[in-house]
Length: 317
Image (tube, rainbow, N blue to C red; front, side, top):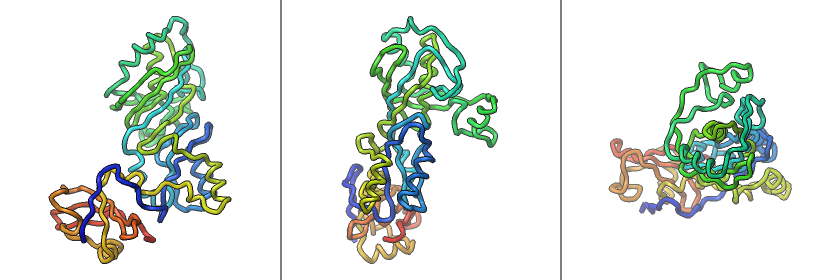
């Protein structure tokens, strides 16, 4: 076999096959679990889950993993995320957003556009952020939001986060709209709360739209209604994105029929069976395709074991 190594950003070649992604534009006031439950009924899929929670208040990009794509849920979280953030000056809440109970009020009339622009500088780059009490993080085995609902507040250690860009989009006080691109673990609600304090007033999140998450973009989303309509018209898979949508950062190789059968049965390929061994380091992974162009497996390079081990093999290929 001659390995055909691709590069990041290569053409997505595989069809739905054993699974794929639904890039859903999440409705406001729906939980991410609500979306999964609804889509499970529409698709009749036994394996389905979301790739990163969105708060009920938020709308926008919510990747849903269907079928074998659930095995690649970790790849959905790769890369950055971006949000359009609407903040309301003058009051704070216990949830840091408009769904919570008001905890404090302060005059905001002295806050200017220039003040907001200047305050944003402190929230760019790498810094530590204290997560909100109303979050899904754990404390001594309990979810923080469950403690918060009981009126219990505990100390939360600050966590490192990164903001790649943060810009003022619109200033119409008391409403302020921001655009932020950030890394994993970042809380937009905390950002708004902290900006309010920095401005010498209070603030809470009143609107949130996720405009991208990894390779998933808002302009490519579909609604739950569109998925349902596609199902009624014969096949909801017409709006599915293929599994290798999230795997374009890996090189690719096409296997000959003999090696396809070996990988299907979990057998290791030799070092020389996938491209030039000199192009890879231990732990590198590649997308392996059948001659027909279907994604078959993710192979991991283990030169110390003299081969390529099938790490994830798609059933039903």
